[in-house]
Length: 111
Image (cartoon, rainbow, N blue to C red; front, side, top):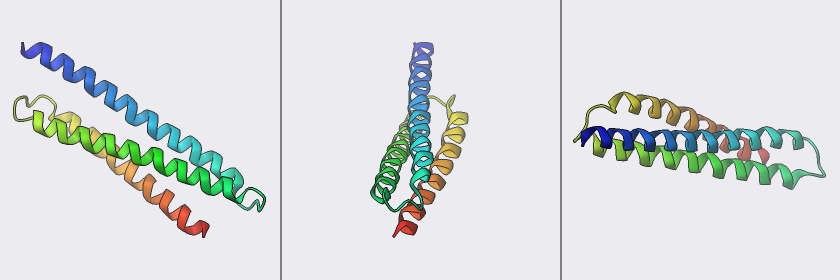
């Protein structure tokens, strides 16, 4: 019984980690494409819109990460196997937070 619970949790961890990476990658791609419009007066709204869209995707990534860390902490009471994976999620959380702060800086620098 415990082995099937571990396998389900590993499957969930893999899916959540993939989704966090997907949203972070989309945010980085949108942020990179927004750099194209810097300094071009004609496309000023495109730059702002892409920064806002990048902010939304990285924010979703942060929310998924925070919710899964809380879920893992709740599950740690029953199973201590996944404590090592929390460190990985926390390091991704730090990277995504820094990226979010950079996007906020870019939006504020825009005005």
